[in-house]
Image 1: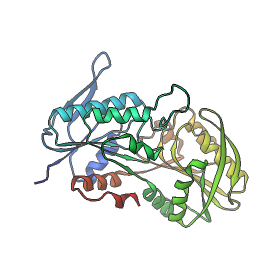
Image 2: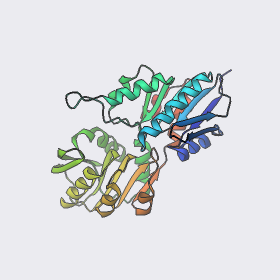
Image 3: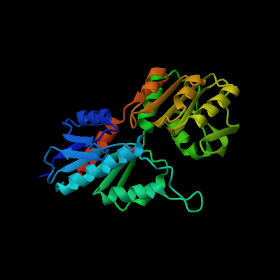
Image 4: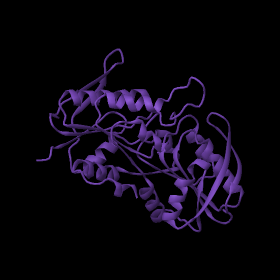
Length: 314
């Protein structure tokens, strides 16, 4: 007889966790994640998890270190309570951009986080749209890396007025992602040639492809400070794009991101709920959120029943 699924969450993604639970027709498990008076994280799991198949839904988004520690302590608590298997469901994997040494004596923090997750008792990791796919190799446990292409492209086809669409990669590293969207939508492809003059500073140099008289859709895995995105939007508009939209999986939106997007030529930014939108982003009226709860729900169901997860990667 297969063990029961137990789903818990910390403070990072309560709405997404509830949506996944609803999709699976489950009650979200009872776990209190709070603080002691000195700021230390305190976790109390009120449900029996002995022998259960446990899934911990928690993005390591801002405040990154707090949410990461919550996830680690939740994992440790479940393992010490004799859970049968513990899977970390990490819709947004923080520290993913620190996946290699970019300077002498620099850390590889993405690998450190992978080691911490394993050490805390996780048996498996389920995540979405890793900034660098090779991070899967940092783990000695199974990792399933889902993609939001199907959810986002379906919304674009259904809801946005895409007359003569062209998918635009805001940098050379995102060409494969933009090509996947273009193939799904039967659209053209363009690339921004960008060179950075410093950290979180981007300068648009050249546009490869045709956007004149077309609807440009910028595609990226995440929006951090939005400098790259807004610079690319200005570039395609200058080259004759009639309308400019943007799609991204992870709305990190740090620093001046929301203000930049509000002041930009971008008409609408479509993102997923891997990270909750800030109040400022919601108030701007420029963002639309597409839920990935069903995708994570299907992946959890497949993992629980030992079915193939690969069909969800298409």
